[in-house]
Length: 334
Image (cartoon, rainbow, N blue to C red; front, side, top):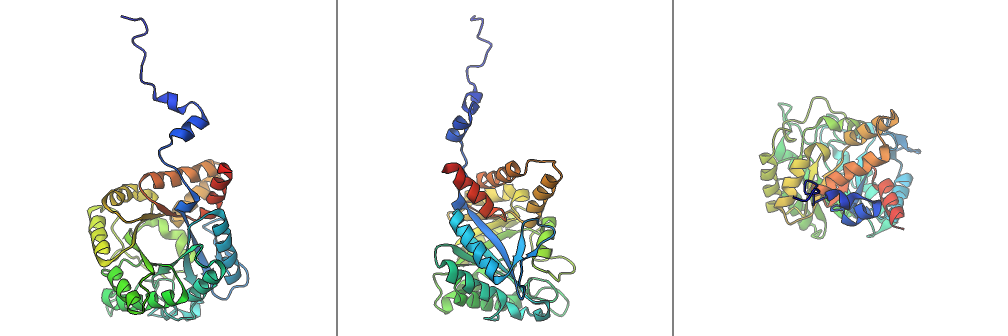
């Protein structure tokens, strides 16, 4: 026997020897076009309002939102997802500011559309939680539970005013049964067949939404466990997926991203429509907080989390780091 016979012939490490080699054989690549920037715009402010739990993220003024949209576009980001933050005095039980043509989200959609036209995909959050005085994603019944079908009527109105404002994509995020079908019908009824629907197909009742509540000035007391999904369930997501596709979803999403990569992978394997994942506020905050403590390398951690989401099957990633990461990716290829 050859004295060297005990050494391995197959050496995967050969493909890890240099940065150039690792780049050449990489199975998953991040591109600026994979990224979508979530952005908050607050009614009545003259300066951006920092969000304490999300360092580097703000509630924009109308003017700074326009600037953020242009910066995202110039960095190569594909889309911007807009969330409106109304004046507290305008919140009510039905969330009427959400369907007011002059409500903050509709105004913001028009602002951004005027600024970037069709060059950036303008998306809008289609949900009532920012606009209700009780903070839930729908209309409450007499017993305090969210009334699914009454809420669908409100979502239909929201879809129409957002489409009239010029949005390219609506994102019904309230996890009401039948929401995609109702929104599709509402859009088609007013001749907005070209407005796409990004279905929040698997939106879990997560502990990681905490900072987002600050970001949108949520009035919520209690929880959303009766309509958002149970974190223990995967098959339930596949049922939601089948229903959303049947109702006309153009794209589907898993939210949160990091804690639900198994769900994301299962969804991505099962569909022939684009798949998105939302790296939510708590995921962002954890990395920023640990980096501030010096416990992790911030930039490497950001890229690793995003690469993991992309590897699991997301073609589009909503992340608060979208513009920053897109710039770095672009610079690295220059």
